[in-house]
Image 1: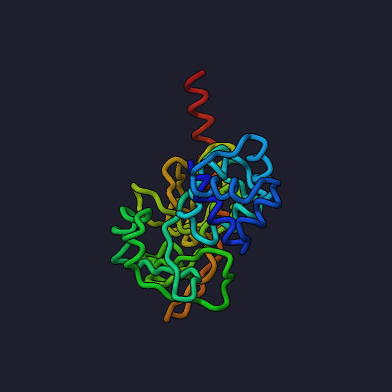
Image 2: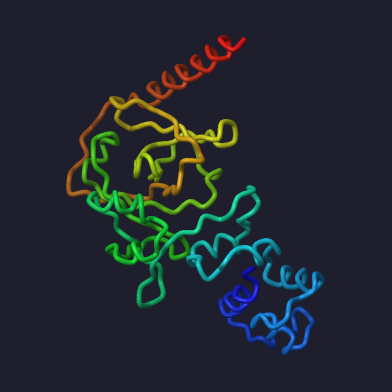
Length: 267
């Protein structure tokens, strides 16, 4: 249970004293101090007052360790993206900050991809990645940059540096969003997606380059999703005929036919 430490973290983020919080939830200051120092435990009635004061659910206050969350993740929860609304725990993201206490953009090169697949959740691994800042990006969101390889996302060229925003709620993704997706089996892939999570518990993924076949990824296999924000490349993109929608429609038709055939075989 993480309540004592969470009370300290949340109070300090709001620049409140123990006396101010104690007054707001109508308990003596020494009593509230006991909650933070794990000397005493609040009653259910007091827990409800604490929940209302910080505008967070009791589940979140008790079960999520706020000291292990990045600033952007705390912002997401405080903005109403409750960690238990979708029935699953919040995805803990290892992150780093600069000397001004602002979140870095970590850089994952092609050479670091294999290591990232194993160490994405290890703060010690993330700590040694190169970092930088892009001043035009929001300070309230978390970003990471990945170097892509291959030609599946042409006209974005091989070797480009693609920056993505960390996505906590995968249901928020829309069909056509370009995303960097991490799975343990396939590692890091950069694809456009079709969000089939609610109906099939999977993401359909396809390339901008129609020479590459689309496929699906089960939600259970996904570890991280970063939504495309921008890319940097020294190469000029080459013009390419736009057959993406037709390619995607044919792929969907093929998938639907396979599903129908399986049902007929079972019948």
